Structure formats: structure tokens, C-alpha cells
Amino acid sequence: MECRKLLSELSNYIDHDIDPAICEQIEKHIDGCSPCQVFIETLRDTVRIFKENCPQKDVPEEAKKKLREKLKEVKSEK
Amino acid sequence: MIILEEEILVKKSKEGDFEAFEELVNLHEKHVYNIAWNMLRNQEDAEEVLQETFIKAYNKLNQFEGRSKFSTWLYRIATNEALMIIRKKNPVQPVSLDEPIDDGYRTKIRRELIDWKENPQDIYLKKELKEKIDYIIYSLPEDYRSVFVLRDIQGFSGEKVSEILSITIPAVKARLHRARLYAREILNDYFKEQR
Image 1 (cartoon, rainbow over the protein chains, first blue to last red):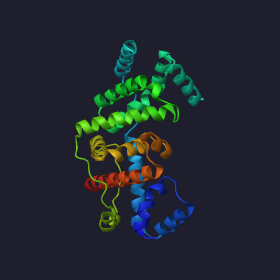
Image 2 (tube, rainbow over the protein chains, first blue to last red):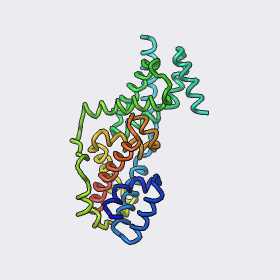
Image 3 (tube, one colour):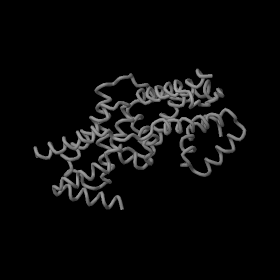
Image 4 (cartoon, each protein chain N blue to C red):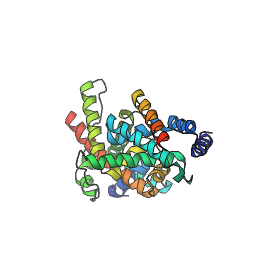
């Protein structure tokens, strides 16, 4: 497998959502290709960095209150 | 269990039970808020999307036929509301991800062996990284942004994202891959500057 062909499959590879035969080809390729090994690692890091730096936020209490008040208004207008 | 509870609440809400609809709000407001927040990276806009999403859902509940899960339908409304704000504001000219991407990787990135070691102790660097993250999300074209946020930040499955956005699973995978490559490139430059 060429580096170029590998690139198109990398997201599927890091998501473990890939045909086993292609997975085997990728692993065989990266065994002898350090730039591709680094590329895969940094792609994995990219996904991890977003996960770690974008934690789920709680809805602010004021926004919750406003939403419920607004919905009551909409209900009474119906 | 949750799905069954949701179906009952939707049915009751359609029959005019306002408390049942409030329960649906309790169940889903955090997801809706976070979808909006992560697409827009702005609290005020996220709150607007939160409000508009549930008002629309309440007013259009009778149009929900139950072919998808209620949450899928609701998150679609939220995503569309967020996209409307992006179109209205368009704070950063989005990059084009439609061009072939192979050349850059062949000639440049593949040959770079950048050390991506982060230093979480350094508050300033952490702040810079967060700004980079904001920039990446802002500059992604909307089709890519919604897939990237729903899949990689909200953590929904590819199937769920395809249902929310009404696109095929291969389209989800293709957009996600391009968005990740774009994000990787920006982060690679960032870590290169930190060395």
C-alpha cells in the first residue's frame, strides 16, 4: 500500500471501523514507514485534543429558567 | 428504557401534556446546548439556539412522525438553528476543503516529524491551544463543522450523525476525515511553533 492510499483510510483506521483486509495492509505498511506512523499518531492526538478540550458544559441556570418561561409563554399563546 | 420513556413523553406532549414536554426538555437540553455551544463557541448564541430549538420542537411536535428517534429530530433542529446563526454572522471566512488534499501531505506534512508533546501545566499555552481549537471550528465550512462537532466532540456514532444531518454514512466519514486532516494540519503548525 502506498502512503497516499493509506491517508484516505486513516480516519476509519483510528476509529476501528475498517475492513480487516485493509487494516492488515495499513499495519504492514506502517511497520516500515515512520512518517506514516507519526501521521497516524498526530491524527489520533487531534481527535483526543478536541475531546479533552471541549468538555460537555452544564446549561447555565439563568438560561434554563429563561427557556422554561419562554415555553410557558408560547404555550399560552397557542 | 430511556427510548421507551421518551416515546411516552412525546405521545403525552402531542396530546397537550405540557409537563411531559418539560420532561423532554429536562432530558435533552444539555445535549442541545452543547451541540450549539460547540458549533458556535459562544454562550449567548448557544442560549439562543437552545431556546429556538425547543420553541420550534414544541410548535412543530405534531409534524414529528416518529420515523426517527425524538432526540435525532431535536438535534437536527438544533444543528440547523446553529447553522443559521453561522450563516448570519460568518465570523471567519471558512476554508475550502473541496480541493484535493494529497499534494500537501506528499510534499510537506508526511515528512514532518513534529513532537506534539503538550504541557498542560502552562496556563498560557493551554489558553493558546483553546484559541486554536476555536479557530479550527470557526474556519471549518459548515458541512464539515456540523459533522466534526457531532461526531468528534459530541461523540455521536456515525449512524446517528448521518440521521441527524440526513446524509449518508459514507458522506459522514468523508467529511469527518477531511475535517480531521484540516484540524491536524493547524495543530501541527501550532506545535511546531511551540518547539
